[in-house]
Image 1: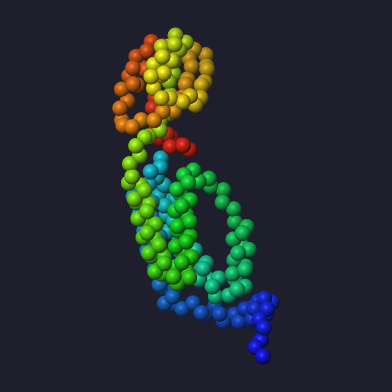
Image 2: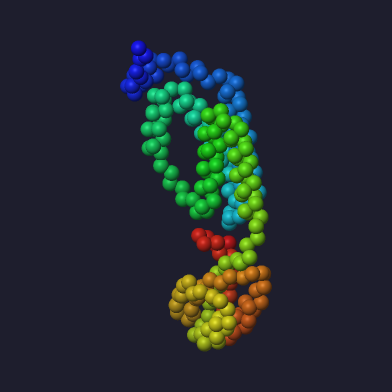
Length: 226
């Protein structure tokens, strides 16, 4: 009669059979880390090539390469012994990340690096390589698409005498009031508007209005401006 393996028996067998640590050969480690490093560098290149944020961070980009390698090492480790896998899950569950990710696309690169590390550590090299090439192609395709309308923030600082002429001029444009700050001697207005091209001749018209002291236009992407 075949022995019935319950969960507790599997745990005991895994604890006793500590020789399972030797199941990862040097060839598997070499292939796994080589594949992870190659994909990590590919992610590094894609992120640097198609970065569209405000400030590019070299250290943040390097973390994708290291994240891929570290995830590969973790998967290789926990695949050898069930006790290690349970202990690793418990250890990783107490990790807390405090760094705020402002660009949602950065989270995509994080999951990409982790997924590549998992597939490389699990010896699924074709899936890791083909999947990474496909994801990189999709990111390149979407990044090269031209956005017809660009959102901008129009900031105007003026005195009281420019209120009516400025209001009449802004009615000719499609704007949305975002904020209004009134201070001693002047008022600061912030509008959101969309432009199809780089024609900013309207700024000169606004600046020529008597009482307008400053007109600024900032490219707006939702969470941050540049």
